[in-house]
Image (cartoon, rainbow, N blue to C red; front, side, top):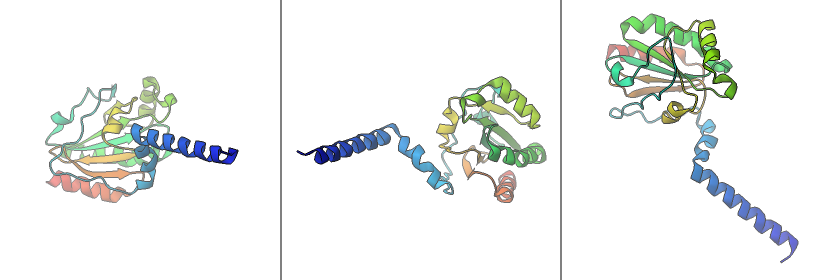
Length: 188
């Protein structure tokens, strides 16, 4: 064989190995997810939302979704270094203030994008400086983020009073629709 044929065969074999590795490790889902930014997950009337993984809690004792049945729950995946997350925080804070007494529980799940955001003392400082009063739990190993199949910051999930996911919003915006759905779920 000549040198070009060997190079071509080597390239094809390398691409096959990389492709198989990507599929085998599940990395393809993470790699392709940004192209699904506007998709909505299949909402189920019977499947309960995944539990929250253990972490450090700020502004609250540890919460369990099972104990919150009967309340609407807003789960906010965020990280303090994300500008989009910071733009969403004022809306989440206002919903917490406005609807907490009516049956809404907001939980911030801090899933750091970088290692610099994983220190609990830095998170406590940022939560205080942002004026966040709702519970925040750390998710440094992304167990909760992965359980919810969240792939971007911020991502909001609305759970109904039975603990089922009824809405998912990836990214900023659509605040009026999210608030409308909070109101609808509270009225159910």
